[in-house]
Length: 56
Image (cartoon, rainbow, N blue to C red; front, side, top):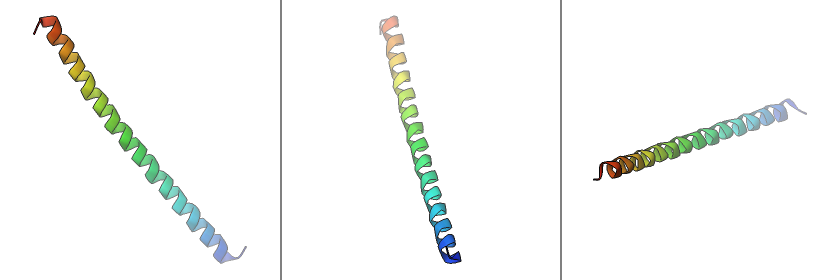
């Protein structure tokens, strides 16, 4: 391979790695949002259970 092909291949691989990292960061962010939503839902259910136990 010529030097230019090696450099172009390296740049392509670098770009693919950067895209992969960005995709993983998006997945992590989405999971954090989901866990936050689940936590809020859990708090609501817990509050409802406590209110029911108190007869509210």
